[in-house]
Each structure stands twice: as C-alpha cells, then as structure tokens.
Picture 1 (tube, rainbow, N blue to C red):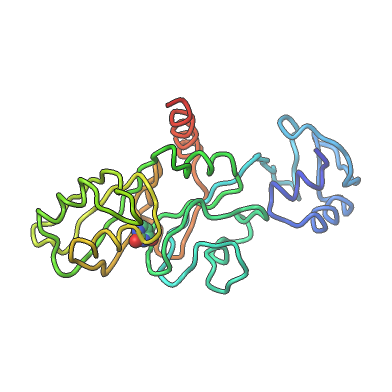
Picture 2 (cartoon, rainbow, N blue to C red; picture 1 turned 120 degrees about the vertical axis):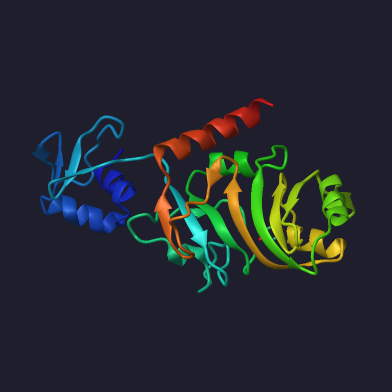
Amino acid sequence: MRLDKYLADATGMTRTESARAIRGGAVTVGGSVVRKPETHIDENAAAVTLRGAPVGWQAFHYVMLHKPRGTVSTTDPDERSVMHLIPPELARHDMFPCGRLDVDTEGLLLITDDGALAHELLSPRHHAEKVYFFRCDPPLTEAMAETLERGILLDGEMTKPAAVSREADGLSGTITLTEGKFHQIKRMLHAVGSEITYLRRKRFGTLVLDENLAPGECRALTDGEIGALRALAAAQTRE
Ligand code: URA
C-alpha cells in the first residue's frame, strides 16, 4: 500500500494532508524518515510513526455511537446526519451507519466502513438480535405483549416472533427483534392499541450500548467487540 494512503487510512487525515506530512519529514518507516508519499509499504508489518508517535493501521474501522434523538441514520448530506457526530480522529471517508434508527429513536448505532460485515449483520436471511428499551402509553398489558411475541401482520406479512418483557405497570419494557421493518416497534405497539413514547436501542447482535456514552457521544469499538461481531456474522453465515 502507498504510504500516503496508509497514513490517511490510519489517522483520518486526507491524502493531501498525509502527503504533506510525509514530504515534510514527519513520517518514519522502520525508524527511517521517508519523504516520498508514493513509497510502498507492507501495511500489515510496517512500523510507521507520525511526529514520533506510532501509527496503527487497520483495514476497517468501527465506531459505537449513542445516537441522540433528532438525528438521521444516513450518509446523505443532511445537517441532522449522525455522521456529523463522529470526530475526525474516528471518522473515515467510507463509513456508514450499519442499519437505521428512526429520527426520534436513540441508542446504539454501529458506524463502520466494513461493508461485508455490515451486510452479514443486516442480511434478512440472518437474525442478529436487536434489543430496545421502550416506554409506551396506554400501558401494554400481558395479553398485548403475548400477541406481539407471537407475531402480528405488518405489510401483509407476519412479524417474526419477538421477546417482550414489560414492567408491572405496562408503561415500559424491552423488546427483542430479529428483523428490522420500517418503524417496526412503533407499528407493532400501535397494532395492539398502544403508542411508543420513547425508544432506545440497547443491543445489536453481540454489541451492547456503552452506558458511559451520553446521547451524541461515540467511541471506537474494542478488539473484543469487533471479534465478537465477526464471530456472530461468521456463525450466521454457516447457518
Ligand atoms: N422500531 C422502530 O419503530 N423504530 C426504530 O428506530 C427501531 C425499531
């Protein structure tokens, strides 16, 4: 891989910025300053530093975002796009939200540039679990929850079995889905006579929303979280 591309991928700098840093003598490879942006290096083995600090290269990048209400799960130019919440050191040009949450839903959103992994996790053939906390009004009765669990008719198709647990007053609970139809939870509750007043995604597959992240905050996934998602996608592929 070219050194300027490696540096841009690793740091989030543009190719122009990384080429400028290389020409300026700020970059070493294997301990020696390299001033030619077009120099080819082995991205899996090279020891690269930028202004004395080691630079780590990864093929793909993964960010956990606590999506706030009022933002849109899109890469389209929209001032409300969730992509504006990703700081430059975590953002990469090819990143996109892996799945969608409604504008008024908050919670866990995976942002990545790993198209193959996202495809596996989102594929309707598979069934990565998505767990949501909800509040609703009027209260969800046990009978209504059981109806949701069995499945209801949406868009002419039965929803897949869901798991619903409700607080005693029926005004909140969690619902686990293995599919993602448009406004699914809102429409499911509406169909049994209640309305969602608040919705937050807490888990997507193996990935759990970090409680230390306030709405609008994000962080890079840990190696363990990435490994668990890859293992889940691989297991789903084998099924
Ligand atoms: N179901 C909904 O109704 N909205 C979401 O954002 C996610 C699931």
